[in-house]
Length: 123
Image 1 (cartoon, rainbow, N blue to C red):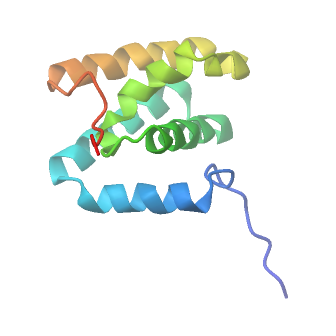
Image 2 (cartoon, rainbow, N blue to C red):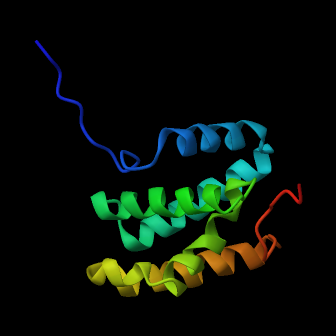
């Protein structure tokens, strides 16, 4: 009997991007891993953990990797990217929540003195 494979929030993310996400995670410090996890948790607590909420995480993480970020703790910076580039318009029901999450996550980033620019390699 064949098992039906459930499509998850990362099902549309190309495999090479997913591999890069894992590679980045493995190279991150424990402190940066905690900052990433906290930012994602804050965002999900505001915009929701339904399918669309989880899909937003995947979209933002994919953009981070495509943009060359070398640290997933840059997550909060890319919520703003998502809003500024019209992504929020695709999620009309979550529009206010996404904008609120951006403010809350930015406050978190300021509290912990996280960089205001993504970690990128200059090479």
